[in-house]
Length: 98
Image: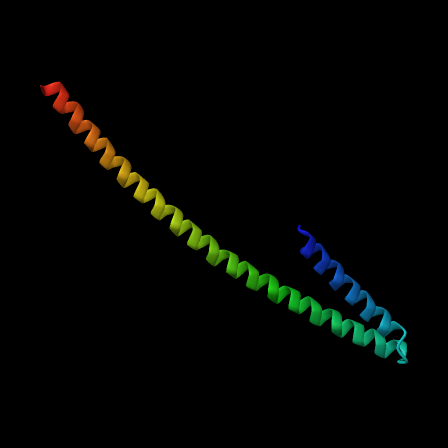
């Protein structure tokens, strides 16, 4: 993890902690505060799940593109290697026949 990622994670953690403390000391009764915390936690969990699923989809697409590019490159290398092998074979036969 680089410094920016660590800073972002720390900032989000501090923000969530601040929100939780603010809710706990707010002038609402305990029942309402607990409902609000539960609602916010569910929203946060749902958002995290959505982002996780979206990231998985994007990674899957990227993996497919990488695989496609890799197979294309392998095919190109295989074709070039075959052409070189044929050329070497022709030259060796030419030397052997003369």
